[in-house]
Image (cartoon, rainbow, N blue to C red; front, side, top):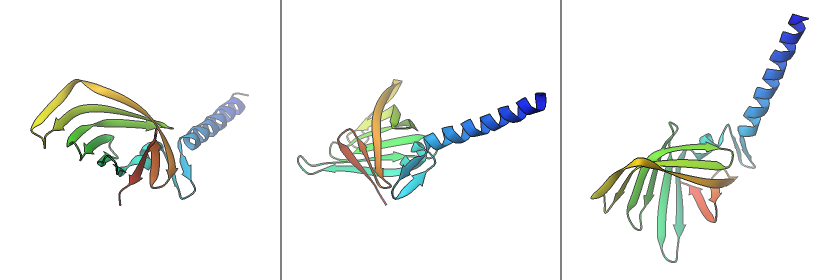
Length: 134
């Protein structure tokens, strides 16, 4: 009886683990990623023509985050966590004026976003369309 219960429990655990892992996957028509964080890895850009504005975000495999608004020369460094359609960013340092004015944020600033991956190279954050840089 104990062996049957152990086998059942191990089987159930394996099934639940597979279900949770599958729930974390990002499946798109042009690619599948093991997690939202894996999907976000790399550099993304956002541009607007009027008024002209250009920004990038870089997501590291190690959880590091970098943001640069080229139009107003604002930069942020920090960390990120991504699960499902939630993106949590913690800003630890910010700079303006080509690095002349910088501050270490104490306490760090937390930001939460909802994101929607639409393809391997595009995600939406609210109304902003971010494209993967190659």
